[in-house]
Image 1 (cartoon, rainbow, N blue to C red):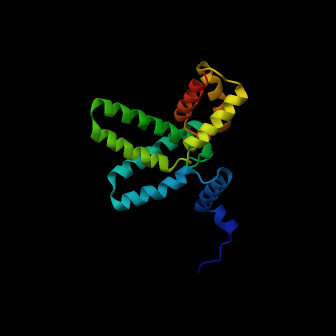
Image 2 (cartoon, rainbow, N blue to C red):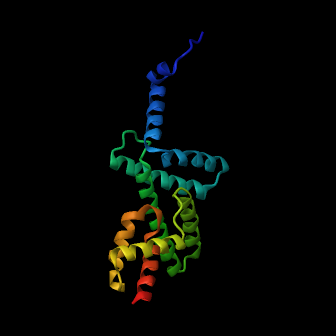
Image 3 (cartoon, one colour):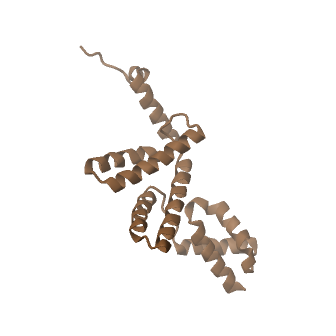
Length: 184
């Protein structure tokens, strides 16, 4: 006969201990991206979607590599900040690859990279639109008292200090450059 296990007894068992570590990690760090990717990976396996499966495995591999480098308490969890950092690095790599393949005339490879890029972006937090970036740029220009196009670095430093995780740096640089050119 089964005896009624309490949560405490379950946590003392091997499986329960691992589950407890997982729950503590998720509560401490928020919903870790690896825990969001695993169900998508299983869905892709069941659907036999090879492209999506390969892309998800690449993402998971990069997150696990970062987890080992950071020395996370468990191999399965990273802080959201670290997950976003890894995903942004993957996004940048895909954007560079797309540009390279297009200039080389390999449109089918560029299309495959675009699909992977969209998948990576689905796990990233939403970025600010151009209107919001322009507003932040105007505030940073006022704050730094920038007046010439040579002050782009100073303005970008101020913007990145305040809104680094909320915007795309390249898009922000284009906006700041255009605003400073119009002021000169």
